[in-house]
Image (cartoon, rainbow, N blue to C red):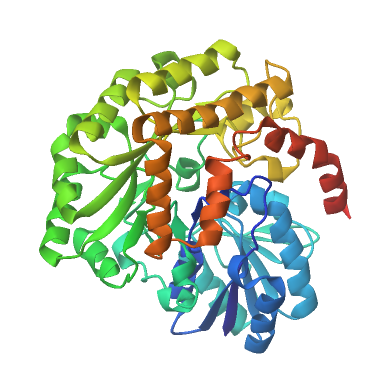
Length: 481
């Protein structure tokens, strides 16, 4: 059968995809599970645009069209895309999947969606496509919610198996787009998954919910084989906690060194792992350059306990010092609680001053449907404008007046820029950016947008955030029609 997989156009309010713009790895994994038995097409409408994307789809004449909704913020634009798909391909089966669809599948029981996939797409979609080809009866395919007058839940998705046995991503289907993906000033960028799931249970997180507390790892040999297929010099490892299995981390490092593959890796891990095993960081420095993303979340133990982080502030502080001493790039991220007052914001600024962590980022505590946090605070959630669920806006009541809250929040973004200039100087910082343009690591257009976002008048301006709340009623009214 012919299957088209669509990535919805860029949307959102603040435009955080201007800082990190990555390939649709989930769609590539689904296509990898369908080929060669079925013919697949991936269209990234963030790059092609809607009209060009649909011209490609019409020429392909798909029998099934798959849409991805990974993030809650994608709901409205994904539904608009689905309605256009029905117009352009009236006889195609329209399927939606992804993390958000799996977390809250009943929300997607809307026209023109035919089927919602609940679970790992590359394990469910081959069964779905084969059944549709055979007799168009999907009732015996596990892991589906079929949209009928009385919806049909087909039961739990297949048991999650050995990730080494999963098909390789169909990267050839996005080759025409590959040079467009980047993170910060590094381009082109590829994504690599070496493990799935997370054993921890942070209340704001949906990952462990989606994977049902399972944690599965690919073998070092499998990871190296995937890396050998990646041409991009920059690789973002999508594992939620890299080096969770330290023994495997060491083995993978050894195999990478032996392979001669050198990349700039961006990884996500925990501060307690860095504190216990700094030798692992030193080993991985031999694998190429590295940037470590740390979800520190809070600066004190009480804050960490409030989000069920199962970590300590001392670990966070020591991990920062270790990375600084080893000369490894790092990006800490913190959760800003709507219940904060001015002193809470000032405490975080003082922490940044004391540590010199000028690469810090800040997320507003956001209850996402399907998380424990959502279950706890749903009565307090003030909107169903899903575009506001972008972790840059509050959807919960604030202790400070809303404008004052956003003044303090924007002040955090301005503060890290000021600290960066204090450490490196404004001229040196801008010179590095010009160097990124000159070497083609990122486009001038992306630089302008990124500078406007991070160092200019967007994140540092409280009106950038407040405006979205003012426009929300009109946006909701438009979606209703």
